[in-house]
Image (cartoon, rainbow, N blue to C red):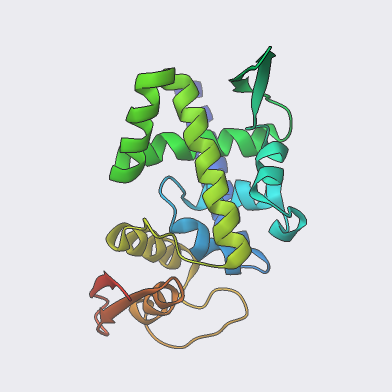
Length: 215
């Protein structure tokens, strides 16, 4: 029993060190520019965001969303019979780590985000839960491609949820990530990131803020 406890403590220490290292990488170039963009998407936290960014690399090497979907192995196989075309299972070719991170994000998104949950339920009623979650992962990846390619906000972003995720990231990594040494409180840096995402904030030096979509 004591040996098991020591092993558990060792594993917890190693996990903590790995988590800290991942957060440290997330505020380095080129990751720091993309992190706020990814964290606005439902289902994404620092770990799977970094997994996705590391697997994809430069998003501009994928000329279309279809290319990155194929790279991830999330493209549906096609069965042809005469004039009938049916979408089958995902091909499972490509990056397994990227595919796993996206499926994990999809499960989180359908659990916690109203719009994605509604999409999932409509699909699940027609094709079953397993195929539906793969379809959601594919849709998330398409959204991710547009967001990273054009550096734009997610039109379904929940400002309150996004602000909490960004604040957690800022709190773990410090208030001056990367080479962009912006002075001020965490609330001011949070305001900066949210404004970049097309959200406006009203924040004070005590760290409290209210959020609402701009435009």
